[in-house]
Amino acid sequence: MDAFILLGAPGAGKGTVASMLTESTGLQHVSTGDMLREAVKAGSPVGLEAKSYMEKGELVPDEVILGIVRERLAAGAKNARYLFDGFPRTEAQASGLETVLRDVGGRLCAVFQLEVPEEVLVDRLAGRRICRACGAVYHVRNIPTKVDGVCDRCGGETVQRPDDTEATVRNRLAVYRRQTEGLIEVYRRQNVLVEVPAAGAREETRDRILAHVPPPEA
Ligand code: ADP
Ligand code: ZN
Image 1 (cartoon, helix red, strand yellow):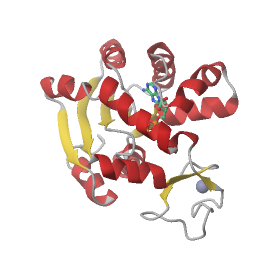
Image 2 (cartoon, rainbow, N blue to C red; image 1 turned 90 degrees about the vertical axis):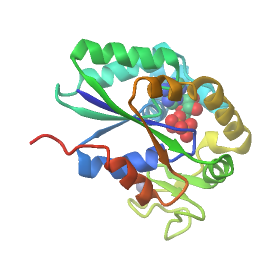
Image 3 (cartoon, rainbow, N blue to C red; image 1 turned 120 degrees about the vertical axis):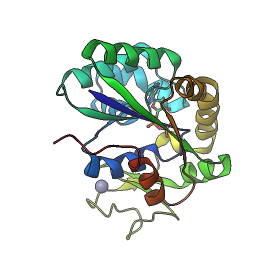
Image 4 (tube, helix red, strand yellow; image 1 turned 90 degrees about the horizontal axis):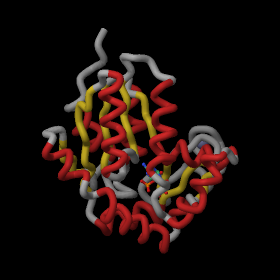
């Protein structure tokens, strides 16, 4: 198993870039945020536990996160290649991932740190809209839908994520600084960190990352 990680503040573009990368690289996109939102929608035990944390912009407990990640990876092939988005977010999650990789003889290939100035983050999150049906991501100014409120891809309704309101956004950024930013140093020391300027066009960010992802083995 090969693992790649997208690290960056909320609004840095992890989800957007991840979905642009999976097509050409054969990487499987693992977004803990998406998995949790699905669990909340389905009303599963994990969803019931996660909901209140997510609404406040707090982190869901590590054991819950490690549980869903382990379950997701157990279902995959031995030679699968994963792109983690929004995971790990704490040192405990990072060492949990390390354990999983060790158990299956997997390898952490690279950690892409998406660098975006704070003003850009806030603007991206406040203007973000997502499709209720397919999860496609838009922005009221930067990536508008052709028809207001309607997903280009599937015709579903586009809405603001409940945790994209201003107060929650501010808390998520604070939580990122407090609990996740420290991982940058951890991965720098392991020599796997790749710093990626990510305030520009999505295609630019994608290409910077692609340069570090070898094509899948034949
Ligand atoms: P963003 O990166 O824009 O905050 P995500 O979709 O990654 O969006 O996460 C949304 C919310 O889901 C987080 O605020 C948090 O409550 C929860 N969450 C997602 N991934 C994790 C994780 N690895 N650890 C703890 N909580 C998480
Ligand atoms: Zn859609």
